[in-house]
Length: 61
Image (cartoon, rainbow, N blue to C red; front, side, top):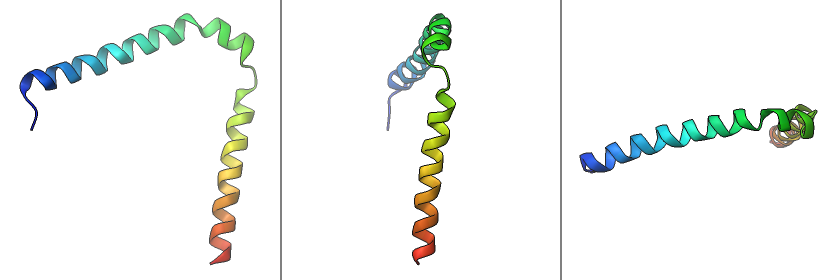
């Protein structure tokens, strides 16, 4: 299905991509704490709306 070169490239790409993402996030962590306060409220609101839609859908059947 895939050659060994493609598999090696894919594995290395995933490792390097994840490492760069972690490094970038840690670098910007101070800015995130300043500019993105109370983001958990948005996350909880989204989950509540999804739960509400699921409950409405199941209650109608």
